[in-house]
Amino acid sequence: MFRHAMSESATPKSSKESAVPKGSLVHLHTFCHSGDCCPELHEDLAAPPEKRFIITDDFGGSIQLSREDLVAILTIDPAKFGITISS
Image (tube, one colour):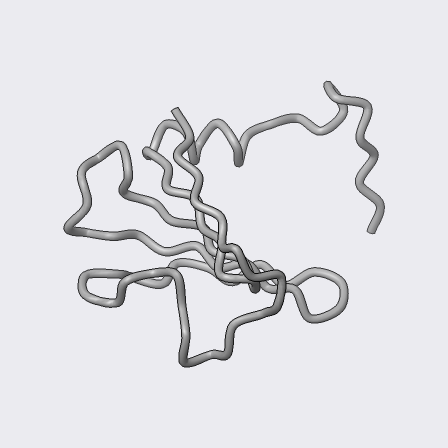
């Protein structure tokens, strides 16, 4: 299931600091939304399958997911939860 690690800090880390180790990471996507919050999705090629995908936030927090968990998140139908997405 989901593995979550949160930073103690509530301030964004600089671009040189990251909660994600650099070694075998492949950057897959940056999710920029309103303001300057831009979570990033990476694949760690050296990680075990249950921790292969990493989403990091601007505050140094991260979550490690399996491929199955990531697919489940990406295929959630917001309407099932009463969420309306406006463009």
